[in-house]
Amino acid sequence: MLTDSELDDAVRAIGAPLLERLDELVELANARISSELPSYHTLVPPDDLRASGRNVVGMVLGQLVGASRSDMDGSVKAAVERGRQRQAQGVALEDVLRAVRLDFAILWEPVVEMTRDGKLPAEVSSLAMLRIWESLEGVMLALTEGYRYQEIVADRESLGRRTRAMTALVYEPDMDPRTLERHAEVLGFEVSETLLIIAARLGDRQDSHLEMRWRADGAEAHVLLVGDHVVGLTRWSERNARVLSDIVEGFEDRLAVVVPPVVGIAEAHRAISLARSVLPAAPTGTVTAARDLLVESLVISQPSIATPLSRVLLGPLLDLPPVERERLLETLDGWMVIDGTTTDVAKQLYRHRNTVINHLRRVEEVTGLSTNRPRDIATLVAALTAARSWMPRR
Image (cartoon, rainbow, N blue to C red):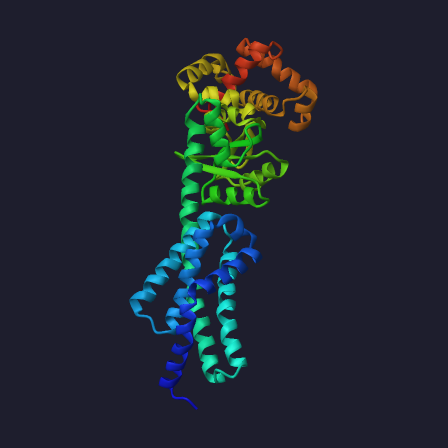
């Protein structure tokens, strides 16, 4: 039975001749790594692989022979940097750790052979194997630390590039084709991709939730905060449209505007501008098509014109008895919202069709605007929309 001191001396005696064979062992390990891990063969240059092998195997053998703490610290720092490098090269972390295990096998085999030949007592070989494995575990931890750190750095850099590309689509109207192509590549889209573009107010960190749900099926998705609202961009699909509805519908603190499917990144700026322009007119708790908000948007954007004009056009309604005024306005509201025949309006309001017709005729008499002439209809709808801000209602 050997003492602890004798065991340490015996382990150092194992490490010394192996350390003299460092280059040979590294070449053996790297040949096995290149053979069994295609990613290393493809992505890691031979000189880089050789330097990495010397770092890992040298670190393990250095610990066996009792290298100084400063030497070991330097090897650990090198392993951390190597982990960052492997992530940047595109090698999967699983392959990085498997390569370390192959290094372990190269060191493990000579010790097993010496034990089998009776050159090493079992307790010496066991301790040597334990220290080799502990050292390799330290290497794997250092590599993983560097790899994960580089992932964070890469994610931040990628996020920065995506943010800049999205910001350009929001604010820059006339980009040349090459710039558009570069932005499309950064965002993960084909130049001619069909896109779903939205503007929304979501609140409660739902912007990140929307982006994650859009990405759930592997689609690229980007949601950018712009002032008091967000702009969203993803691949067009019925599913992605439903995801937006799920997040917005029924929530009074949320609203969204969606434009028709946009074909090509070159149309993104115009679509984003349209969605943002009409967003102030969108009702809460629902997803609204941008084309359905044209009148509301014009009224909101030009209150100094819309409000006085609506007072002039609809002012005569105020002179009517309150009961009659309310009935006429209720019929007009139904006529605007239902967007159908007088029969449809009557069904919705639980009135006779002739009552609806009479109410519309009465409106024509009072306002001088016909509900049959397109220009008068457009004027009447705009005036009624503007009147919501000033006309008293029950």
